[in-house]
Length: 134
Image 1 (spheres, helix red, strand yellow):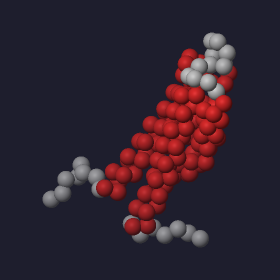
Image 2 (cartoon, rainbow, N blue to C red):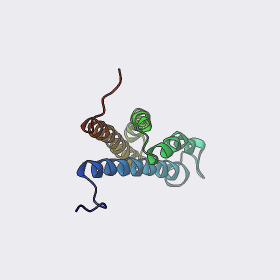
Image 3 (cartoon, rainbow, N blue to C red):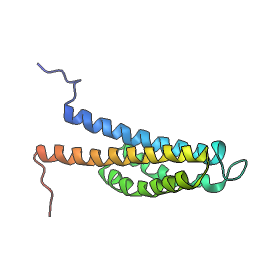
Image 4 (cartoon, helix red, strand yellow):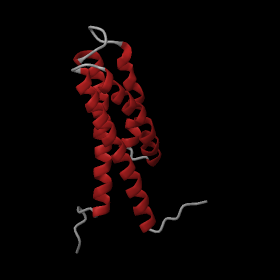
């Protein structure tokens, strides 16, 4: 008799990558808001640059609903935020430089989680007998 509460290693890995992606995305949203409103705003009292997190809010529902398409396009969108982080890490002074490095790390984590999630789900689908249509 098998325990129905146990998940296979393949399912556990997919769940892990899903939660890493969601966590990284939520971290980027929180960091972007805190950075531009409280921690190191361009203008005292905050700036409209905090609106840069709005595009990050769109894929959150898709990631939580485990939609493959969302994982694919988020892995492309995230490079815009990665580029911003690299540029600001190079050109800004502290504390903004350190926040930019955190942004870069979160972007890399989100990309890796999305890429692994898509890869694992496709591998699991093929192992279950799914074949892509031409």
